[in-house]
Every structure is written in structure tokens, then in C-alpha cells.
Length: 212
Image (tube, rainbow, N blue to C red):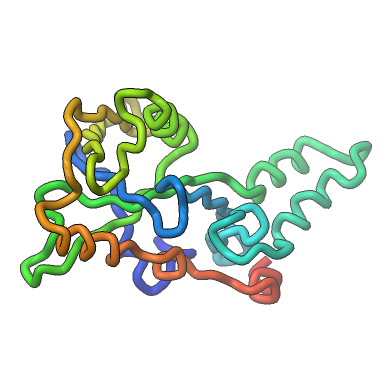
């Protein structure tokens, strides 16, 4: 259940399907790389809301003090009173990284009306690190560029045992290619990159405080 997405969350979110999918990661407007470091507080308040942290998501949105971060830090204000329950609560409410990048799925770049189908892919810190390592490899550097970038194969393998997470792996293709055939198509894709506010609810300090 979505407790933190904006009104268009499901429209823009990309969930990795089973098997192998070929995608192109896109450059994010105004950034040198495509990656957005978004931090979230999960299961907050009586209704278990997901809150995009305004304090730690630096460079993505306007930064201001986050009531949830303030509460989390207060749990360790007096270290002599920290208990196992305190540690568990801190671990539960502290902001957690889920990096994002805009992507298109190869073969589904445009819908039947000719509209670019750009999605926002959220992934774990481990996969984020792998994507960053790929970016500094001389053979695959700047793989998100529109003129001579590199498509990436994303493979999802089902977990072997109950309770385990499915495994997601990446493998860049060997050859470079253009994002699309024409300049007009490239512009159409880049213009369709969603804003964070399109996908997630940007809450004020007061709104976050009321949820907490």
C-alpha cells in the first residue's frame, strides 16, 4: 500500500519485472549524474506513513529540519538511558537511503499516442553502489548520456527461500548507442522525466510533525 507517494506515484514508479529487462538510465535535469539520493522514514505514525526526509535528501528538494530526524536523534540524547528497545525504535524511524534514477524500458519508449514512457526506478544502496562503480569504469563511463550512452540489462531472480529478497543484478551492454533515433524523440524522452514532486508527497515541517 502506498503511504508516501504523490498522486502520480504508480504512473511513474518502475518495478523490476521477473527475468531480464533492457533499460536506459537517463540524465536527470540539472545534475551531472542521473542519481537522486532520497531518504525515507518508514512506518511513521498510527497509519504507518512513508515520509520523504526533507533534511537528508539534500540537493533533491528544499532542505529543512525534519521532525522525525529530531525525534530519532533525541532517542540517543542521554546515552546512559539507551536500551535495546530504544535502539530498535531508532533503527525503525531513522531515515533510510533509497536511490532513484529516471529510466526508459527499451522497446517501450513511447506509448500508442507517441508519449515518452519515462519511469523512476528506486533501488537499494547496494545496487546504487554497483551502478556508481559501473559509472567510473572507463569502458562504461557516462553510460546515461543521450548521444553515446549504454543500455543496461537488469535481471531479477526470485529468492530461493521464504523471507529472502529477490536478487536484482545489472550488466551493461558492450556497445554505445543513441538514446533514440531522432533529435525530436530524444527531446521528448528528456522532457518527460518526472519531478520528485510528481512521484512523492513533499510535506511541510508542520505536516510531518502532525503525522509523527
